[in-house]
Image: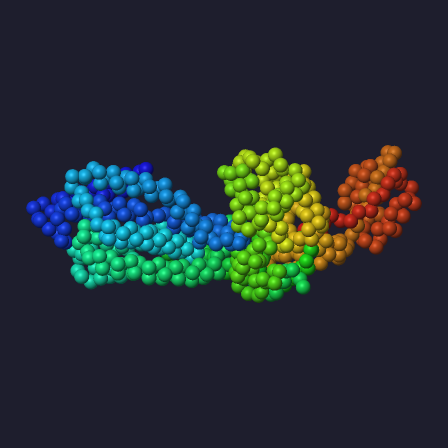
Length: 242
Length: 325
């Protein structure tokens, strides 16, 4: 609950901050203030759907040796934990989505409504792929527990980097072009910046389609890395606590 | 072919030493003393199908480490393991469906749900058919007499009841090989005996290969013909329990009961070393081969002997002797 209030609070602070920065200026980063507020609101709405807390679950299972019980059974830990997490977070996600939606309602006068079936479909596909990417990434971070007992610090660091490149703090197109290119090659921008810009129709549909492709490539890469890290980690695994 | 084959198996653990206190913590940021502990050193053994082996050793001897390597949780740092022709760490489904691991101090049952729910989960995991599941479950429930606790939340069960349910959960898929790591730990004598009787019966009827570790000698004496004793990561004995006793128990105990007014300690001292003494019952320790003669000498002496029992030295003492030497 406190976490959710923090989440809403962060969104509000961002909106206030941008309102102050705009003060008189018409357009920043190609967006008017109204568009900027919409960007923040819709972006956080997508982000609420996408985020998960898998890494601490995986890390705990490894640290406490609970993983052993899965290793001796004819079942896949990866499948188990993924299905469990999807079940578990569906409620938490729904709450997050609700609170984000509530903030949108609060700014209903400023919020720009836009609907275009082609854009809509691309955005939905993008959010689903971003959700999968995020699951895999969190799982991978959790696997670091094979090497170190504490993953929270690493997780927090990656979380910040992720948020920066995703455009969660500010639209990345106000940065030099190089940053934009980097973040388009990374998977993070597709969980905030790109779908939010697509919603505002500031990006072309082709950019969105290309993004979907990049996301699929990243999912394949992450899956491959997970396989390797899992196998190497198991060689180190000591199954402590049992 | 042997069910379980272990050749030159080793496992080393890495660990660090940290000095106490904040200063120690700061130091360890820059330099950590890396140390290696050899939990299992170059051990080899093989176990035939249907055998029930006792795996003995003090804490930290390497018993659990070995069991973990046999079940594929740990990768060995050296040597080979083969169970039922499979390499455990490859974690093939085919192998995993044929063995089970039960740990006395770790539970696989879902704590917040009744045991039957875990059984159903296991049915799905092990892909047991409805018919087989029902048959096995009924049989096991019958054997343990736990029909009335199946639908009670696991955390409300007593330790003994929980252990029974743990065993049922592990046996639903009819494993050919069973690893039991201290299944009787923390149980009272009655519950211990229940579990013991069950293991004995199960091994005899299903011809399941079982490796059992336990700190209770009663378990070992009752169940295992063959024992493997491990200490500091090395096997120090592998053979029949009887032979072990013969080899190490160089003495026998003569328990002599006197009637009438009893005896004085000085009167019996000449027959051998006194282990325990009171005027009516006295235990004399003699060499194995002299036991008979001592008994005859006692009977033909003028002491008021009522009864003589010639007994083996307790297995506990034998084991203690081995670990100390």
